[in-house]
Image 1 (spheres, rainbow, N blue to C red):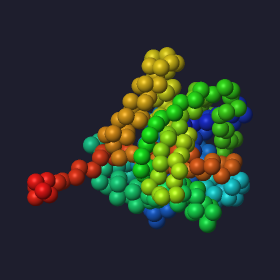
Image 2: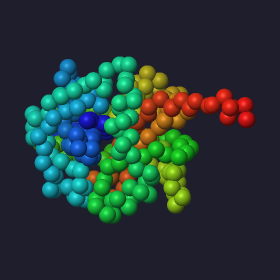
Image 3: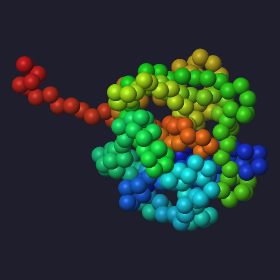
Length: 257
């Protein structure tokens, strides 16, 4: 089940590529990357998040960090199996049954799993999300680069000119706070699209903050899909999961008491 599409990255030699992640039918994390941009984002045959796909792949033996979930994809092998969880109105109950079963307690727990067996994907629910921090990039060198698996030219996307980080603390007594970069596709695409409409200034940041901080934190149960950076061991937020807040029923006797 496809759960994450990170914002596409590009290189002049290989074009635009996407890092995708998901959950196998056996309840294990899997990473499929790099995947050509247009396979997931262009045309009628694109694959939406939370669909089930079938794909021929093999362990990526060239992964620099030996991340256990990393797999290479056989070109042309991806096939749509089931898109029922993408249909509106969204069946959040069924989505949650699959996604929340993968939850870890904290970044601190994920760090322990990394040291133990090279676990490099995870899902956490932050205890407190305190801020959304914007930093404009000074040069192209600040962008991450992922090589196209098939070494072919692909669609070129507009590179992000800003680094956006969530500041938060985990539900772990050892947590001292985090400020971690977010590479979620929806966040990156919203920045790119709204920048054309509103310009590059305070208005743009305010609109992004409302959508991806105020609304996601106050009106939703916000979770972070976490992934290990492919060159050196550092955790990134590679996607957001935000089901509606659970409604808590208060017993009348408790309320009156």
